[in-house]
Image 1 (cartoon, helix red, strand yellow):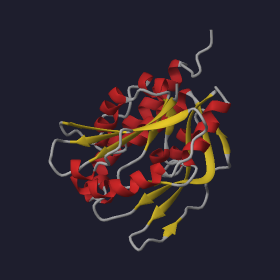
Image 2 (tube, helix red, strand yellow; image 1 turned 90 degrees about the horizontal axis):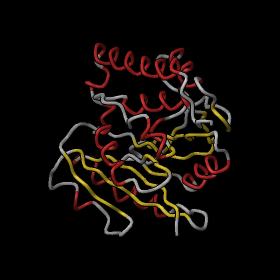
Image 3 (cartoon, one colour; image 1 turned 135 degrees about the vertical axis):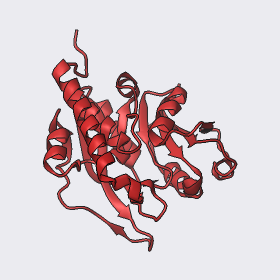
Image 4 (cartoon, helix red, strand yellow; image 1 turned 60 degrees about the horizontal axis):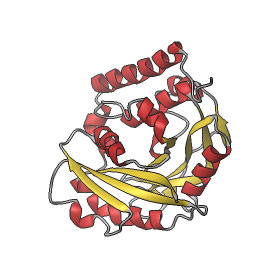
Length: 252
């Protein structure tokens, strides 16, 4: 019987036409023998605009629900997550070759690792890509390292939450993505790092599309008052988890 990686994608109407390219990048992934992927696409809302772009593939599940933002969509998609691992893939992004296999190898090879991330390239409208200086070294990310870096660098983490690969039970134990209008993925990343060691792959794992319709490019995303509140809650959650002393893996 095959073991599964669940790919979780939140989508809304404006980004639905990118699903074809995301699907192509997923089909090009090569997994070890005995492993398979299952793609759960969750529409943030109930419209007629997304379904036509969903691939006809028995490995793909499409669901709809009342709108609540990408964090809500991803979290409710966990109801369909019948595998050992969860991988995030936003509708407008693409996996780089080998990304799933590298993530899987990191977590299968070390039980103390709860989650993995990887190098990102911005995928620009003209088809070119751009990287970022200052990526961490390939290897483990110790508990608390992401919060410390994020706090010291203007609320920017050194690893990208859009590349997250995580043990299913661990993301469920933390309640999924945060109930925030944005930064919900950063909130989960910091919570994960508060309780578990992670892994960073220095090989490119994701092409992060830049386009005029993306949520992080909208003015509301950088509203100072809201951003301050989001960052405060994200930090408080991570620090509370740290103070409680709960750790993954649980011993005894």
